[in-house]
Structures are given as structure tokens and as C-alpha cells.
Amino acid sequence: MAHKKAGGSSKLGRDSAGRRLGVKLNQGQLAKTGAIIIRQRGTKYHPGKNVKKGKDDTLYAMITGLVKFSNRKLRKFNGQLKMAKIVNVLPMTKN
Image 1 (tube, rainbow, N blue to C red):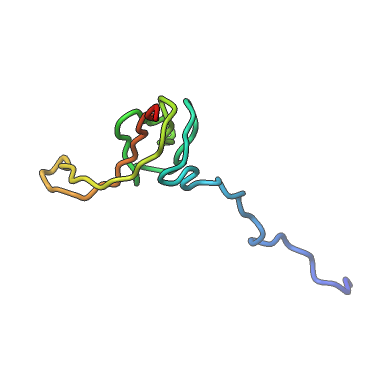
Image 2: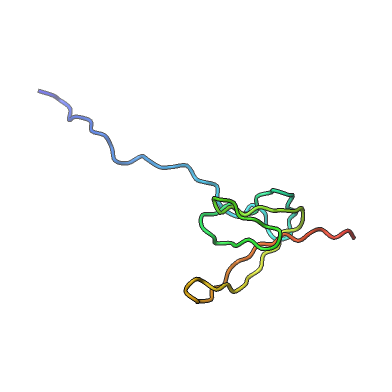
């Protein structure tokens, strides 16, 4: 007879690596052209002036300038208004 119970496979121990999402450049920081400002899933933050959204919802700068966050009311498809966080990149002034 066997002296040990058969070692079955565990259902635990599987996990994926973190995706490193979040804000990469904060308000007032310098963003170079093409710099990633926010990595996100879905549109928690929306693109504003001089900011584009990639296919994975990443927001990146189109010009070199300072990052600025603001809030604005956007109309949803069902007619409701919702407060949305907007990310802009403002061009550097030559002063």
C-alpha cells in the first residue's frame, strides 16, 4: 500500500504580472513629443488639446509642453452629463 496520498495539482498559485498603469507625468511637468502621460484601461482620463489616445487607451503628447489637468462636463450617449477628467499639453512660452 502507498504510504503517501497522491500529490494533486493545486488550484492556487497563478497570477499575472502588474501592467504598470497610471499617471506617468503630473500637472506642470514637461512632456516631450510622443511621451506617455497616462496608461489606462478604458477612458478614466480623456484627451484634450495636443493629446492623442492610443489603441490601448494610453494618452500621449503630440507636442512638447507642460501637462495640465482639468475637468469638463461631457454628454454621454444616453444624454446624461458626466464630469470628465481632461488632459492637455500646453505649448511652452518663450519668456
